[in-house]
Length: 436
Ligand code: 5AD
Ligand code: SF4
Image: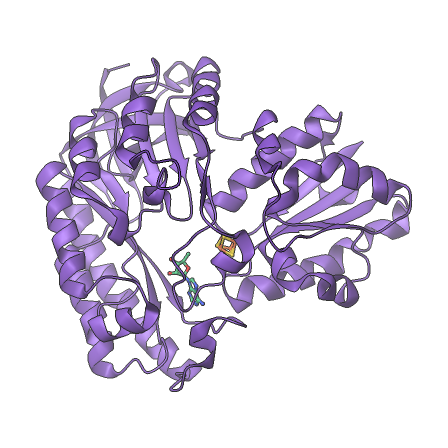
């Protein structure tokens, strides 16, 4: 039996798919080369904005053809759209045989059995079940041999007014330290060098266990073989001085942080219920720069939030100019059903959003080309992750991609390179030394 998974959305969703692959492979399923050859097609969905919603329906339209060739083939939908839409999704898409959310991934084996028996197997719950930790008993199946995501918490308690996540992934719950560390140990034994801790709001990890997040960093760092640590996504409000200090002290923690600002205007930030002002965001950035020498940042920005004026938007541009992010993920505000912002007055037109987005991208392009220039002739530590177009590729500690000449023996190695050419989205390096 063969499976095919199509994943949309964030890194959490991708890590969920890696776990689902682990579940399926422990049931004897093997990966299919394409959806046409699969006996089970799963779409792991995202619903953060309207666009990913639409993509799911168009893929379902395509995938249903599988049943003409292989009437026993099953189609499943999981993840955030499944959780948000519930039964309505099956009514809209009757070809769906299996449906579950991130709360119920561990129940996949019984759902498959049910569907094979000819029933619609739908497992959706309002809240996470008591036994959801069973999920961690399954391994993950990953594409990247050397860098691994490890989900350390689920859900989010922040309630940003634009965001659907607290509804689709539930309340914040931390995975136990023991469970995380045992997965990290297993990964390292498997040859993984870089551990990327994941959570919708990862810096809040441990609040429900009475353990500060920095303790998790120290514990992961103490495992032999962990060469690099990253974590995503940190919320500015939970990024304490103790975390910043730990980031600076722990040599394996990379000098890069994704710290979503969302908007520059403190008035808009208040409407978003982000819990910080523009000035407070700058204070966090300064604090991080103080403790973590050479740290770089990336961010998420929403343009055209309800009532955003020209002046508000200029505050966002000001944040870009002052922080000089190495990467900016920008999104047009997309009203999500049943979120507070959906009901706010002053929704911006698509024209305004597009125009502001274009301006933002142009400014970021300029900033990025200056940042890229500054990398030229610097020495960087790179973890070689794979081959692309005949060249080795890896990332610097500051999260930039580097290509260099070399052979397979360098895969998984941490090397020192000199940057000989640097463009906004890629750099060329020459090997100086193998470090580890
Ligand atoms: N509209 C547009 N962007 C959104 N994001 C979250 N919700 C919305 C929305 N309703 C963005 C935020 C978040 C990223 C993952 O997606 O910037 O950080
Ligand atoms: Fe999409 Fe948010 Fe769900 Fe991730 S958590 S898949 S971004 S809706």
